[in-house]
Length: 74
Image 1 (cartoon, helix red, strand yellow):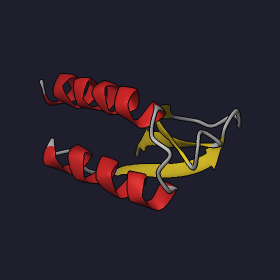
Image 2: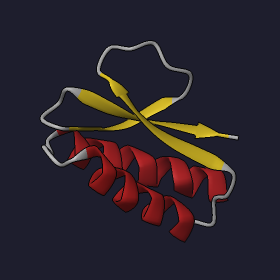
Image 3: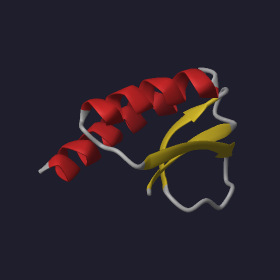
Image 4: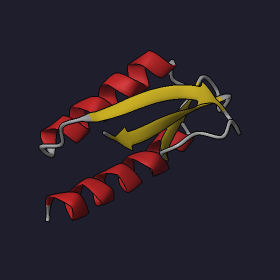
């Protein structure tokens, strides 16, 4: 059940985060707070250049759409 809630939360974040032109660190902090509020532990959020092959799920974009935030459970 927690995984379903986390997935729904991340997907809703992705929709709002795609339009945002926020700095990556600010957006990562907001996403981390929501993930932790859902009880998730052992994860990582990484900012990479858009289009870079990364292992994980894209949960948002930052810096005017030039970078992506990647979520990975670990």
